[in-house]
Length: 228
Image (cartoon, rainbow, N blue to C red; front, side, top):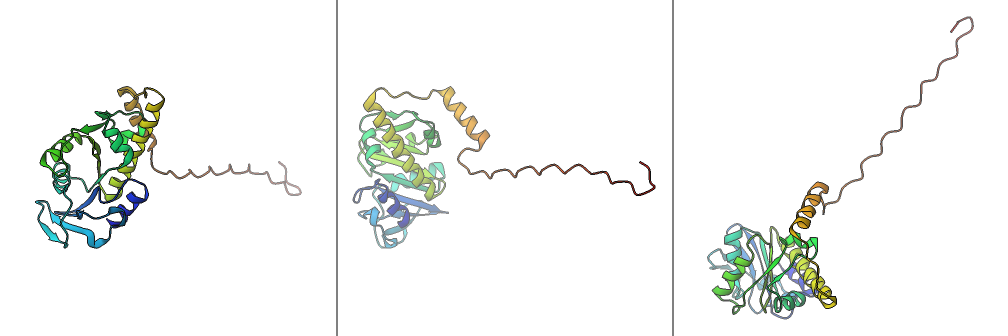
């Protein structure tokens, strides 16, 4: 948890005490404490709760967005959740109703990223709207607030947060020059089919070179007195 938070800070996705991170292990959830500076998080600033939100380990109160984290675990059965106030994602959340699929890498998040309607932080209303926005997606934006991503592992959730921030930055730069083109459904399906066929995103060893052909057998010279 501490390593993941420090990485998010190093990548510029965190500011001060804003944001929160959690990871699930069975029926327990480790979550960052409220008021912790995530970019400098230490292990003692992580609190463990059960899926009802009862603190079972740790001396600090969990994040005010605990209900959002627990809701994601209950509904989607994922392994980790990351919430940031990343600058590009937050900027896009202040303008758009959804981040369109302008690049095929956003398909790793499910395609178009929805923007959940604004609600006060830490409220059941915010948690409910974000859970709806996450349906079929591993990322959502929170209007005038920030972003949330999830993944099977904490590393996956962090990578999704970085990808979302990259996608928002690409959209912002493209929109500054004109109206960004959006990949249509047919183009998105073609990318998915190509990625599956080529096992895109994984390394592949170079196949071994074929063995050189064996040299042709040479005829032996007949011995003296022997005819061919």
